[in-house]
Amino acid sequence: MKRSAEAFLGMPCRKAVVTVPAHFNDQQRQATKDAGRIAGLDVVRIINEPTAAALAYGLHSAGAEGAAQTDKSNVVIFDLGGGTFDVSVLSMDGGIFAVKATGGDTHLGGEDFDNLLVDWCLKQIEDKHGKNAPKVLKASHRHMQRLRRACEAAKRAVSVASSADIDVDALIDGENFNATLTRAIFDRLCQGLFTRCIDTVRSVLKDAGTTTEQVSDVVLVGGSTRIPQLQDILTAMFGGRIELCKSINPDEAVAYGAAVQGAILKNGGTGGGLALDGICTDLLLLDVAPLSLGIELEGKIMSVLIPRNTPIPCIKAREYTTAEDWQTEIDVVVYEGERPHTSANNKLGEFTISGVERAKRGEPKVEVTFQLDANGILSVSAMDKVTGARARSEIKADRGRLTDEDVERMVADAELYKAEDDALSLKIHLRNALEESVYSVKTSLTERNDITGINLLDDILLWLEDDSETATIEEIQKRCDWLFLKFGVRPKPRSSDDRV
Image 1 (cartoon, rainbow, N blue to C red):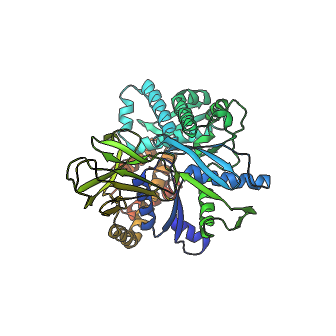
Image 2: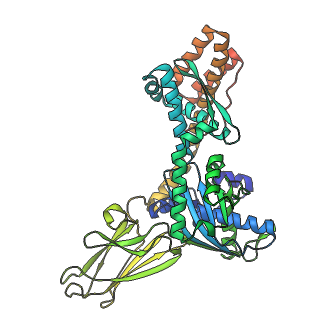
Image 3: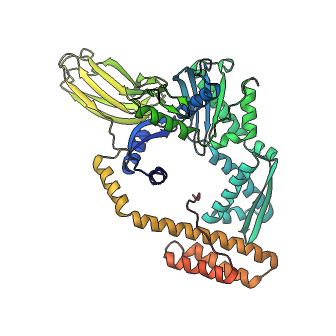
């Protein structure tokens, strides 16, 4: 992506604003920053995806209405992407965007709708070919991926039409698979996922202390929000009085908001009167902590210093004491999560403060301070108020963290093996193009009952299944040339590939 941006802009890209799902925890955010560093980017800010969408939406509305907003008191950002689901409630007053609450499901997204369709197709296959057929199909990773792509295409199609055909060439014992997916079938299959979405919205509204009647707008973000039944359920939830905001391209809203945030930061963090397409960006962005942060007390009790949905950046401090007589050291173990016992929460890291006042249990006074920055990344310090002893940690736990040496090594490796990686990428694209072309030709030969040609293509498919992983690009190209000479079809690799 860095290379793509540099090619488009015609100049080097050194800094970036990166968005993450609102429910990303501290380790995931740190890992995201590390990934940016490995790519050669200074990640100047990490913002939650719903917050980025709110930025895009606020600017769009201001531009459409010709003035900053003052009446959008509560806005719901409904972000259903390919793999994650986030909901945020924001108060929007003029140029101030304050996140009141955020929540979501890191295991709910477009892929889950695809999985339901794949399971439905497998049931059709079982009914027609017997109970063993789905097991045979699942044993072939490539066949399953072809079925999954067909299901995803059908899902997209039934969002704009009443039905769609799922057609996969030579899927079962050389036979084509065909099924018709209607919107009614799709809605019935996905009812459970729709319910999970609505339950999350209700939960986040409750956290924000907001009723459905107090919501003025619902903004749709993410490709999966194009599903008509989901839109109908959302509209009904708000009593039919709100017209869902679809004016932003749901696939681009988050990226647009991140670009706006980058422009604001470039101008000193306030916008400085900067105009984008004639829209003023004098904005103040107030994000919140997605998960509660605290330390472990005796008995594995979670003591929360920064509650979930606290506006960030922020600093919170609390006084603690010793659990044993004459204790001179205290282990500060930091957790994030919403459970009362730390065993059910996520450990972020730990450090020890030495030189604590030597006294009976309960007498020393140690102040622990949590500082959460604008990226949602935590620093912790502790100080004995009598002896003045201090300790501090950036919560650099081993899990999910990379040292500076790790980052430098990975950057060097990426540069060293760039040519090798590019060659491997080209080989994969060429191999996929060959496979698709073979299946396409095989379908036409099947219609003509050309047994000789079908047998030749089956040999190629068997080779693709068994030997293509270790084959050279020259060997794959040789078979591409043979396909062109024999059947007049030349495989064309795509510059990008959506295969998993």
